[in-house]
Image (tube, rainbow, N blue to C red):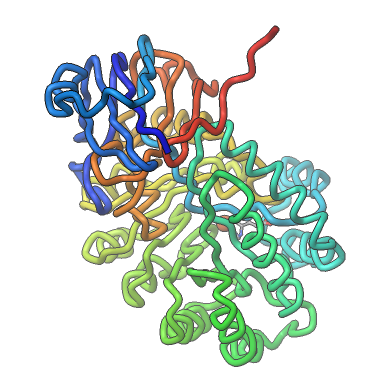
Amino acid sequence: MKAKLIVHAAQIATPVGHSAKRGREMDQISLTSDGAVYIEDGVIRETGSTADVLARLNGREKDAELISAEGKCIIPGFVDSHTHFIFAGYRPEEFVNRLAGTSYLSILKQGGGIQSTVKSTRRASFRELYNDGFSRMNSFLSQGVTTLEGKSGYGLDLETELRQLEVMKSLKGNHSCSLVSTYLGGHAIPPEYAGHADDYVSEMLQDVLPVIKGKGLAQFCDVFCEKDVFSIQQSERLLKGASALGFHLKIHADEVNNLGGAGLAARVGAISADHLLMASKSGIRALAASGTVATLLPCTAFCLNEPYADARTMIKENCAVALASDYNPGSCFTNSIPLIIALAVIHMHMSIAEALTALTLNGAAALDCADRTGSVEPGKTADLLFLQFPDYRFLVYNTGINIVEFVMKKGDFVWQREKRV
Ligand code: NIG
Ligand code: FE
């Protein structure tokens, strides 16, 4: 692949590092005016001001393709580290019922919610799931997401969970956005095990997780630790067993009720604890003292009309905070990156720099890939966004609008804003 030299970017705005930024560090991003990025084999080799990079290259750039980024801000590609994008069927009636006051968990208890998507997904073919998955990935990419996580959890039986994961494996080879897969068999109690959640946990441990491991279909194991879903004890048993099999861990923690999910995440060494709307002060402190990333999903709080997670306290207590979409057909049917950023900054009071760190480097840390992506610096994969404006603050100032003009993945342009002809 021909080397590329991007010059004269109005600004390069990026966190710097190979692991999650915690607490006050989250606000300390690097800003370079008249910036340049030199890329070889899809990897960033040099960054800095155009004059500095040219001086360091000392003529090495003469065969490189020259790209002008005049008037544009360059930031790292976004990492959406929490989604449920492989599913069939929609639930608009539930959304309307929630608006009328019915709670998310009571819908689930009556056999709707996740159970309703399980019914449709069990009936869906590989091809159907693949085609919808592919176009949903295009939608993520068009908003600048260059690394995406996807969860199973709408099968709850071996056959359908495997189908969801196989679809993601196939998408990985065919889409330019990177994809990280998570097994979420512990998303709800399947109808076959109603009233027997402990037996279902045993089945996952004995009959499902070893098969998924054997086929290399998921890097993470996640569980919905919630009242009337999986208890702390059941979640702990599942996660410890998964860890023993070599899975990295994630938890849907303290989303609707505070069960102590944040503390559990820290105790089992989870890579991330996600949601945390109801996390207690002691749970937040446990996360801060551990290596677990606190992944906040503001669009879910917005769609459920619940109070937002307490990002300010988490950052003050020195947590590493990531932001993600939680895109799914129930609690949060949106993958809008501009909405995530607007809610995080305007309603959760994160600074724009903290939000940028949370959606890039810390998102990458929540997927255990911060050594490879999540920032614009030498040695990282060239996953870059060119914004339509010269300053990263337009990400919120131009509220709720996608201002990504070009997306570069591994050094190649893979998406460009449509132009009217
Ligand atoms: O993260 N809470 C559990 N899982 C998803 C919702 C899934 C659904 O409603 O289909 C969440 O909010
Ligand atoms: Fe979720």
